[in-house]
Length: 539
Image 1 (cartoon, rainbow, N blue to C red):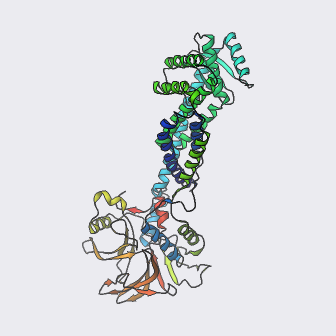
Image 2: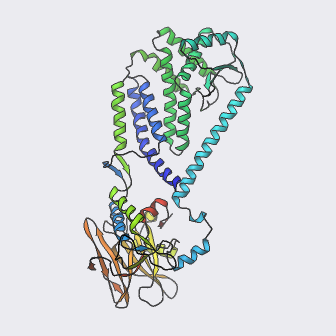
Image 3: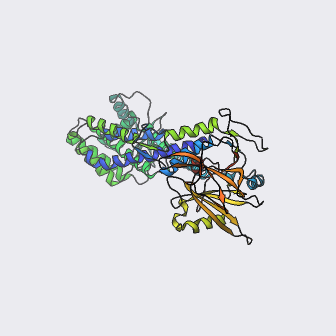
């Protein structure tokens, strides 16, 4: 599903970018004492744009790769090779599963994977975030229009003069508000500057116009709108909201620097007094889509320090360039997921090599292979088995808090031909798996209905071929023996006195050509983990 893919890529970008946000926040107190606010503005803007693009960017051979463990990688590679030699019955899990699918057909909610639910939750959160703030903004616009007046002729005349001095030709409305306590700018297509309906000195009103028109000239409302979009799609990441707060502070700082550029100490002092009076009058939270930013007294003090030291600060072009390149390189050194070779093998398997057998039992031979034998793959059962889970937990002595790290797959099979199905389960987790594979459990049901462990086999990798050939009263089993750096070989396991020999003692085969049977647990394990459909001992 497209939404799931976008969500996964978005989370990956969000995690990687969070590292950069933390890095900038840690460095800011040191760097901002020496350099102007512009360097932070450019960095925050770059991070904002990066967060809007849900496409991971990393080096092909990134040194830091966040992916599954070695055992899982060995397993994935093995599965790609193994599946390329069998035909998969895409519609069938087991006879019991067919009946269960008929019963639950039409119930889509029960089939939603964990990834699907998380994707839906993310999309719903984004919509709610946008709706909440959009309604707040529309309410603000409506109230502003209702409780505002035209500016006085003197104010309008001075306003036009300041516009002309700043080279601003576009139409900008100026109004007096009876409800707003501090000046602000809002609107992208039709910008409006609101000033409180109070008496101002000519110097104060001049500095207010200068400040708000600087926001307009720098397109700060547009930047804040982009920042809002980033917060909406990354609403689940608190560091993105922290970045938004810091970016807003930087927008105010860089606006201050533009207003006071080239001015003397007296001008700066009067400008700070104007800011202080505006902040003292402000009593409510500012709107996201306006130039009005209320960061509290700490932010005001920080702005004042920046104003006082503005003349002695460096532009920091070289430092900014080095820092930006460092951020870009460091983020590209991290990559999520599996290696390319495994992915390409899986793509080959899913795209070309696997033949599909319909639910009526008609086999279709893969066009790329002429001698596959008569092997039909089926998926594992998708319904949880509480009794089996209890047996697995007890057998491996898995602690309660570790149950969520162990998954299992199982099918019903009749190995001894007595007409009664046993359970063959493969358990994957830290207590049952290694680089060579996982542990398989052969489980039967007693007369009283309890499950009983008959045998366990290690170094098992899926799918497992249950051959039609019978030796010593039991069907032969074919598995791939690989992992831990060893070359992979197909091996045949046969039973003696009801017990199968180990994988290491199995007879090595040249391939599976000529073998007839059923390949159970033919699931795409990486896909199951990605979509959240794998069965874990504890949800």
